[in-house]
Length: 148
Image (cartoon, rainbow, N blue to C red):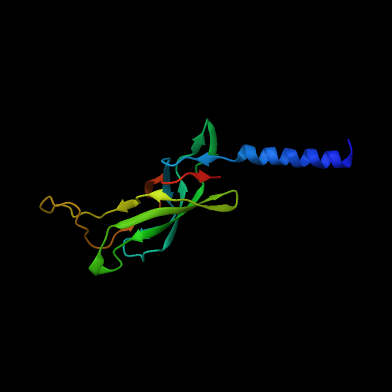
């Protein structure tokens, strides 16, 4: 085999290998994550947090995102402004795959409420600051496909 032929075969092989790892996670896929740090209801909107996949994501029987894959998120609403108090709302913004950070978009958001207990059966009343502890399990649904 000549040097030129060897180089062409090597390039074609690498291209085929790279494409075999490519995957698209469809919109609507549920991502179950656990937080890696505590998040306070009084944290500022826009503050980021880290989490990791609590369940693997598989396509056609092949795991494309293993459990433990790092994800990044941000606070979309909080109680930081007492006059405009809203439930703590979180969303996932990025996923870390093979050293790359891939932006993702999820629908809605995950809302954490501290509801008044033992009070006249009124629900949805947020009472004082509270914390989503390290290890809090949350679910997000992809709004758009993710190309890995």
